[in-house]
Structure formats: structure tokens, C-alpha cells
Length: 134
Image 1 (cartoon, rainbow, N blue to C red):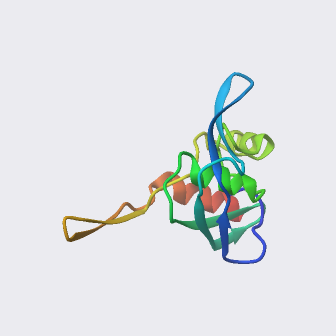
Image 2 (tube, rainbow, N blue to C red):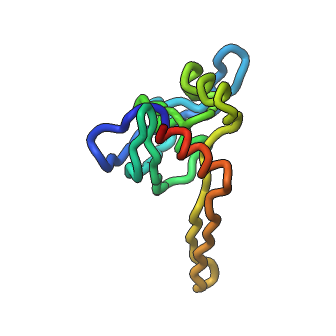
């Protein structure tokens, strides 16, 4: 996420309202009229101007992580819809042109069978982390 996350682990419980039009584009926004949404943000590593986060979802709302991160003033790196334009432009200038949101673990239970699927970060993530450290 953009910026240095302060205060450690944080539970974000902010209701999300879907399909709000903003400049002709459909957006999700924090709104008391929305559906309940709950996310646990945990800092993993800190860099100058950015923080690597682990986010656990307790609900599954559209754009939940993206909107909750922005609501906490730390938008997802490279997010074209809810992100920080200045931060994203700096990433693009350094060659990083996508959104940096990755589901590295998915765990669920189906018909009394538990599943735990993991997907490691790709090489571009490693390059981004090296870039952020410098």
C-alpha cells in the first residue's frame, strides 16, 4: 500500500455501498447505507513510502480490500480506480505498471473437506520490493 502504515494491525469494519456513480464510472464506497464489510490489515514489511500488507477478509464484498485500504488512507499500489495517482505515476516511471494486489492464500471448506491453496508472489513482486527498499 502507499505510505507508511502506522499503528500495526488494524481491523477495518466499514460498510460498502456498490455501484455509486462517480464521473460516469461505477464505484464502491464506504457508506453507512452499504453492506457490512470487515478486513484485518497486518503490516508485513515497511519501505520508504510504502508498506507490504497481509489482509484477512471476514466478508467478501466487491473491491473490499481496495476500498478499505483507501478508506484508511493507504491505497493499493498501482490501483487505477481507488489509488493514489502520484504514487502510481512514480511506480509507472520505475517500470511497475500494474496493480499490486495478490491473493497468496485461499482457504475454505466444501462438503466437509478443507482446502488451502497458495500462490507465491511472482518475480515482478520481488523486483518491486527491491525497488521500494532503495
